[in-house]
Amino acid sequence: MNLSFKNRIALHYMIATAIIMAVIFSAVFFVVQETMYQNIDNDLTFEASKHSGEIQIIDNAIHFINKKEWEEMEHREIQINPVFIQIIDTLGKVMDKSPNLKSDVLPFKNSEKYSTHFNTYLKDKAIRQIQKPIQSNGETKGYLLAAMSLEPSMMVLIKLRNVLIISFSLMLSVLYFISRYLAGRSIIPVKNITETTNHITKNNLNERVELPFYKDELYDLSFGINKLLKRIEDAIERERQFTSDASHELRTPLSSLRGTLEVLIRKPRTQEEYESKIKYGLSEIDRMSQTLEQLLLLARLNSTSKIINNNEDISLPILIEEILSRNNNEILSKNLSVELKSETSENVVVPKYHANLILDNIINNAIKYSKKNTQIHISITNPKNNIICIIKDEGIGIKNDDIPYLFNHFFRSDALEHKHIYGNGLGLSIAQKSAEAINAKIYVESSINSGSIFTIKF
Image (cartoon, rainbow, N blue to C red; front, side):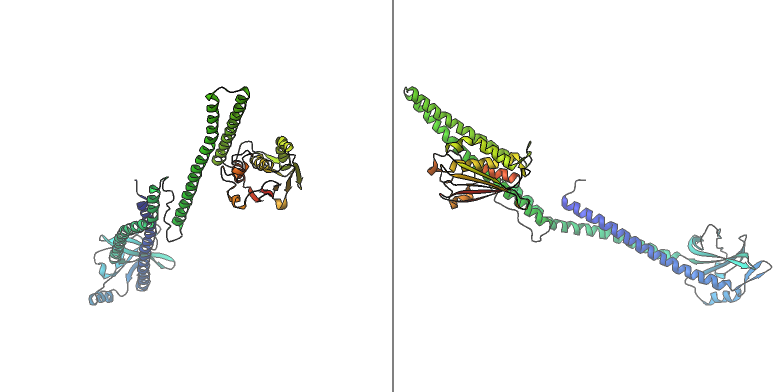
């Protein structure tokens, strides 16, 4: 059965309510029935006790003492709910009975198989009966049977049952339509979510789902979807910007390489000119290769989770020494002095893969942008179980206005002023993505001609 969400809510609510109503209605019916039987049983017990004192036993014969008065009383009064009395011996032979029984006889049941009070029939009419033993000198001489009609009470019970069944059916029918209506109103925010999400495409990602008035589960759902749309919008915008920047960065060296080759084929050149232009072309190819490698690395950092294969831990001082060793030629060429100060033991470890990307790019920048014959200070501390690495250079510095954009793809502060410094603006983007992958933080302080300070908190 394929029901809509609204109908399923109404059906489940109706089933739950039906179970509760069935339990309540059954309890009402059985309480009324039990109360009715209890009242009748009390009356029968009273009548049996009363008439037990009105019998006499003569030579094993049991009779009523005031039989004639009893008959006269029945002639004078109209009994609405008569009580039938009967006396039998131990063999079940009728010894005497009330005048209202006339030719009828109350049935005798084996007292061992039946309780004190039980239901039976008299001339196909339902009655309630009690059997009380008649004893003399500790010996059972017979039984006194008292009975009352159950017909009026049974009619009340049947009417009550029918009323409860009809009420149960009507209430469930009404309840279904009411719950269906209320369910329809309750899922209006869901319909709004569906309509909005179906309408949203990559061209109108700025649209949002309207938040419900009440801050309930549907509000949380709508709020979560809006946050998801915001993340998707930001991701697509970053992708557009990244694609635009990447195409521009790759187009520039390609255009330069094409221009160089076109110049070479216009006329014969000397050996030196060919070598110079070819070397220039190779440098542009190297530049494009490095850019492509960094773009692929960024794509990998954007698409993979925080867990990277072979991302084992490594001692932070050892990792920095390895990076400095790889850049030793550049350090010597600029006559830089590198001071590494560690206030921690080698047991302080960081994730090797991501930490290497972070520190390699930041230390490379410190070397590239440092002035000749200056110092680079690197310190490692471990306050309150946090690993903090500070890299300070005495380089050209960064404008305060440019600091918020440092980690954007392809951004370079005053790139035209520093054409002689090789770079494509992807290094710090890679460092930032790597830091996000391991929940690290990078902080920057800088000023023009006074150097920069990068603080990495692992």
